[in-house]
Length: 304
Image (cartoon, rainbow, N blue to C red):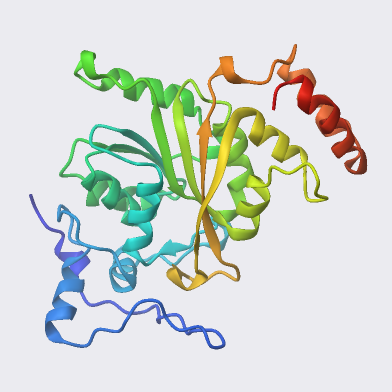
């Protein structure tokens, strides 16, 4: 198991984020020599469960000469406890197959691998894909595809991964999704993954808090109800898990985040409509003020 010396160099072209208003930084400052030494080791390739923090994330980015890219919606998690909670929301256990969208510097990946999961990561940024490939080169339980998730054939990738698992009597029937996804693709990710109950048992995502609250809204007595809510409840049982303060990200976004778990339904459990395509075409064609009336009419008929 080899380390990567260039990742341990003291590099600091990116300044720490300044707190806004009265927001206090969520990560305490460490000034002792021992603390600095521990943080320097936290990004070493092959090191098991060294927690990722602000300094480790910066060193990983600087090792590739990278800054977070707004066009990719990149906001990196700085708090390893949040990653633990994210994995815990999906009850990730040894032997689970997990899809991670946008691994970034690999802080969540590190947690998933430590729990014994087999991780397939989809990363659009070629520099970040190369970084996590190097970081986790010591394990055969990690694979990264450098692709744009919204354009890739994820079902084919997952079936190939299932087939590659050598022990035929222990091949998993379903995988899980655990991801801190870019906020700007959250709706696309939800639309692509939720109808895949034959591949995934649950999808746990870290989303913008306002989006998270809106997606799990199940009441028909609200003006916030949208076609996406019908889509989500058709294919899954959503649950709001917990809030994540904006101060735990680098760079710090303008909004807080939250974790939502979607327990995917099997095809036999979908509402009994004659054609899902026709049903959703009808849903999106209804004027918004009439959507509540339409869904109220169908709600009882299709068994929601």
